[in-house]
Amino acid sequence: MPYIQSSKSSIAPPVNLYYEDTLHGKPVIFIHGWPLNSSMWEYQLSELPKYGLRCIVYDRRGFGKSDKPWGSYDYDNLAGDLKSIIDELNLEEVTLVGFSMGGGEVARYIGKYGTEKIHRVVLISSVTPFMLKTGDNPEGIPQETFNGFIKQIREDRPAFLAQFGKLFYGVHFLNKSVSQELLDWNQSMALEGSPKATTDCIQSFSETDFRNDLLKINVPTLIIHGDSDKIVPVEISGKKSKEMIPDSLFKIYEGEPHGLFYTQKEKLNQDLLDFIVGSEEEEPLYDEENPEIRDPLLSDPTTYPDSSFPIS
Image (cartoon, rainbow, N blue to C red; front, side):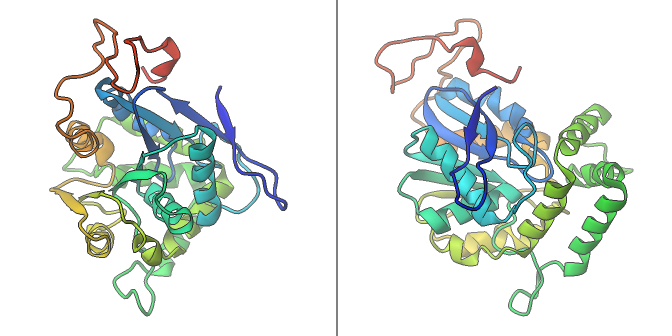
């Protein structure tokens, strides 16, 4: 399995980060949400590479197949992991797509390292700019709410994650928006995370203030949020991020929950293509019946290797 080591530090050993890479085209890094892993992007990776996008996903430290260190899960470390992915793969003109907690990695990366290697930014159901209720952020979520999450996880992690999964996709008595099998898949992803990473990341995404980071985003930015998101309410996140990022494009998905990467996967994929590729290509560059790629970045037509489509 492919791994990239996080940047070496004098105070902590490097962390092995599991990643997948479709190898050809314009680079797009997808950063997953809490408490899932990179597998959540299945319905994007099975479609977007057909249009000349090099889709790269990785498991956040503590989740999925990546190392699960007994160390810090603060956003400076997490942004450093993202930098390691970009540097080790020698990427330029990257589009960063951050979902939920992953939006924090995008913001903190730019806050620390700038936009020299960044072409575009997409924030989906993102926790930015600041989740916690404080004196200067009175519309945020009270600390007691997040403390309650941590308490429940420590008492019965599987039970908490199962209920959280239903809220994540907007499932309730009158709305069966996803199948039980999808919820089971979601639960299996969530349980791959280490208990420590699962609780530590609650503190990270709830207590980290990204307002100064957002002010440094100076590349084209797309913000997407569901107005029925009960996990990260749009009023304290998407709408405020829009106000802080000049000339950003803001799309509200009416009636959609937090997990719109699945509940509105076709619409999301199209919006990503329109934003990243635009009208440059109207037809897929990859045809499943005729697997020939016409990538303008390559001098000669070739075919994707079997390993370049890791999700079936």
